[in-house]
Structures are given as structure tokens and as C-alpha cells.
Length: 280
Image 1 (cartoon, rainbow, N blue to C red):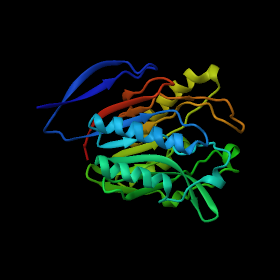
Image 2 (image 1 turned 180 degrees about the vertical axis):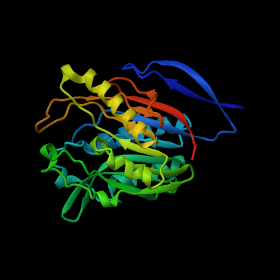
Image 3 (image 1 turned 120 degrees about the vertical axis):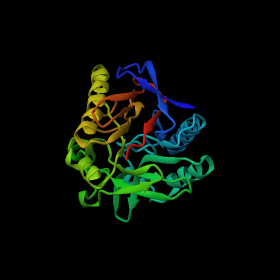
């Protein structure tokens, strides 16, 4: 029996162009990128959307479901310090419940309150509902976010062992500094989960989408890892210096040689499922 892994052109519309068979003798992990619009500050709506997309991904056989950056409140939410939940907390508890019910792994970006500090974080939750890995964004783009949350500690970059091998997490602009994802690779990870929130002015959005794809390919090529970059789409950002900017979508999976093998739609909600060979 053959499991089919779909190859998607690295184009803005995410058009399916070809397929190739992967032998049963080469195990795979079925990964889903859940690309959707996050409404700044509307936690109830964002939780409903996350659940809807996770269920869609699970119904298509995904074992690992990936959501964008700050999928709970939005990464530039103006009341982040007031409203962020702890981890574990209301948002990750919802994800944990779904992980257990659907028997899937979930990676999602979320804002985090920890005492007097607030972080832009991401978690990996196992099918038993446990948070097995947490990453706090290091390169927070302080000119935009210093009033919203704090920087993570580079010394705390870590990985987790899973049933499909060792994986790590970085968040969006962390990957502008290749030394951060390289730390993940140096710790033995073969797969990098990277929630993103790429955004730009409306007139520059298509270029932003192209830049996003090149960014994910570059990280993969320079680290030797598979990279799953799940981006936000639409918007727009509700407040602050980037108010009005939408997100470009085009969530991308790249293999270790820097080739894009799956790309979601431009600026449109989408679920893309891809079988990644477990090569380590």
C-alpha cells in the first residue's frame, strides 16, 4: 500500500501540481498547517476557529497539527500584558482537550503570563494533553512589542523527543537570526515547528508572501531540518504602529535542502496536509 504525499508548487495560490508516492517502508508523519485569520483580542472567536481547524486537520489524518503565532490573542494585541493566560491555562487547556480527544499532537503560538512577565510563546502538546515543549520568542521586534511582552532567553532553547523523533520550536522573527534555529538543530532535532505572523501593507502583501516562503526555505537549507512554517492570514492588525496591515498566509513546509514541498493559499484560510518522511 502506498501513502501519497502531495507536493505543492511554491506559488502564491498554493495550487496542487503533482504527487509522488512514499513507500510504506519509509515511515512518515502526517503534518497539517492550519492557516487562519486571528482576530486581535477576540479570544472566544479565536478559540472557536482554532478548534474548527484542528478538527478539520484531524479528519484528514493529521498526526501533528500546527497553528500560527499568537493564535489566541494576536501577536500585536494591545492588551497582551493584561489578558495573556499562564501556561498551562485557559487556551492551552482547550488545546490539550482536543489533543486527547483527537489523538493528535498540537503546536500553537500563544501569549503567556508568567508572574510579572509576559511572553510570546509557543507550545507542543502531546496526545495525552501534556505540554511537552514550550518556546518563548527571543527576537520580539522590540520596536513593535516592548510594551506588549518580554524577550525569551536564548539559553532556554530546547527540544522534545516524540514518537516521530526529536523536534524543536522557534517563532517567526527568531528565524531571522539563523543561530537560533541552529541551536535547535544542534540539539538533535530533525523537524522545526515555526509559528509565524508575517504581515505587510496591502500593496506589499504579495511580496510579503514571497518573502515568507523564501524565509522558510532559507531556514531549512541552513539548518538541515525540515521546517513547518504556519503563518496567519488576513487580519488586519487592530492597533499599534502596524495597524491595518493584513497577514499574507502562504504557510510553507520546506525540506532540509531548502525546497518548498507544500504551500498554503495566499491570504486565505487553508488546511494543508503533508506526509513528512521521518528520516532521523
